[in-house]
View 1 (tube, helix red, strand yellow):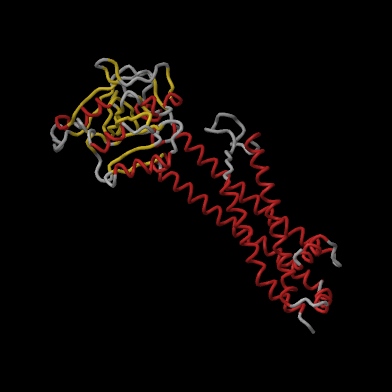
View 2 (cartoon, rainbow, N blue to C red):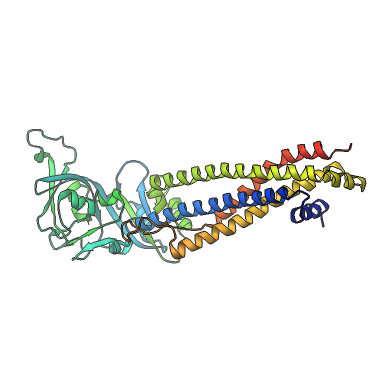
Length: 411
């Protein structure tokens, strides 16, 4: 067994001449453990919120979205896009025409984003899971164009999900200036009816601004025959998302951007990642403060074991070995606190997942979820452990080296 490790382990477990040293050592372990558990829990809660938000977007956003790298429109029959239709990893291929328009109904008006999609859009996403009302998902019937509005957009227009009056939809004509004398003469006008359903993503970006309709309607309104603003894709179940995305990007080249769900909502997830990083940094500072207790414990231990150091020196131990004993002691306290803290953190996360110990208010259904979401990621546990080890080892290195030389040198 390594000599410094053997002596350090005996010092860690044995009683000291002064009972206060044992107490301070215990406090040091508890301080590191609590800070470590806090890191595990906080990072897991942020993961839980991120997974929850990603789950909400899943009902509306495709797995992959192809967009032009420059500009807003691309020809639907471009040869690069035709190659995608034959890709065996793609289960659903949907063309999309998306742009802004003015909605007018019952003397109310608001701007909205018209998203025209093909009839297989229902297969592309889980939109059936977010519909409400007495109807079904339909985009058109014969010559009637249906529009499915977000819940907040319906409220802005003062409409129920099964509104009966037609919504007038206006968009500027291509290449024409607005005639101030009669603005409607410079606008394309179409009508949308209700299939007696609306949708609720529970994200303001969609619920307050989006109308889903058929692609033919959108092309007439925006005068974009033969063009698309994006192509949305769903992969076959056994396909690996990252590898297929890289393959598609390589096939299409720099003219196109291929976005996964996280990149489609880049702003939202980037903010969440920044919040997670800031929380991690603050908790790391708290961990550093907890490690100061280790320094105090080791300082008292070094003073308490001065006579032992003389004995070890007489037995042949050199200054480096004696210093290593106390360095090893500090590292063992740090590692013990790290393992205990991770175990406590994982236990608390499990209890929160199973029983929802910390809840949002007292009444169920007031929020999207009733309790704080928790999702433990293995990479976060590794990062927490390495952080605790790095902070603990670095915090004790210089103080122990200095104190051991001061109090255990050969007199």
